[in-house]
Length: 93
Image: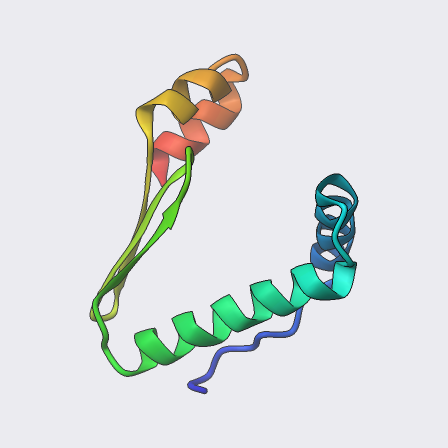
């Protein structure tokens, strides 16, 4: 699919392991879901599809043709604002 790689780095795999522990799900299940989502995203981007990924309580990844932007929900930015450096980074994205 396109020129994208769905391989996860070792750091990503560690994050998956932590998520799996918190959700009481097998790490392989978490990784499979992430890889499947990436494959769908790759296909949609490579074929010029318009789509949105909604991340509950986080924001929306808006994809229009070859333009991709992440829109964070204001509530999340306010929660993160306790760390001014991180909040500024979110707002710049």
